[in-house]
Length: 285
Image (tube, rainbow, N blue to C red; front, side, top):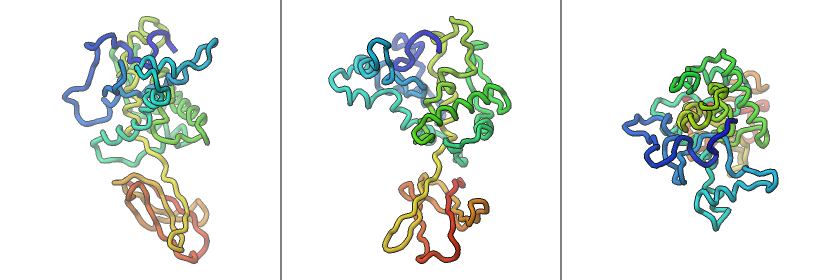
């Protein structure tokens, strides 16, 4: 990582109030999500990977909360200061990016998809900023070495999560290659490093990717009113295909459903009719 301003608690290229580049007259889309001020000094909504709370010094150990308490002005309550740390924006980023997408929602790509080739296909066509030519952009190609590196970096980050799964869409922002270590940024020229790269440039790719991602629909079997009920998680306003299989290979669609309060409930016959079955739900639209 390059030397320069600490991106964990201060947006780059912002040296005074006149240096902000807030969106004006913008269409309603997720591309400017990272330009919204987050209410703490010198920062917009945080889509980068460094975590200020994890900051440490070799002779002091972890000092991140101390740094953040001073920077945020919340010096008397470490717990409260921690709640306002930048990486907490990750919890809302995925949701907000989806809400800002005015196009008809396509089937979301699972943030926990384990296939690097599928990730390469999902990244194809997105736009990243490059400083090879200042102010220039590049369209990602699924068969490029850089996209292969991005897909591998996402999988590496996922493997470090509890249970080797992202707990939410925004957790993918912990992947440095999506922002501060982008393979599209040239770090060989010191003047082009952090002091010359804007916050919007660092966060261009995450802002686009978040709107395409979703969580897997999770299922559970519960006893309700003396019978068996299958419950699936899902997003309100979206349509899910419900399928069953005797062997996890051959799947048959038996209906569609739209979640209510982020949940689909399916009553099963008691006792179950026919051979044992597996069930799943898949986002349709």
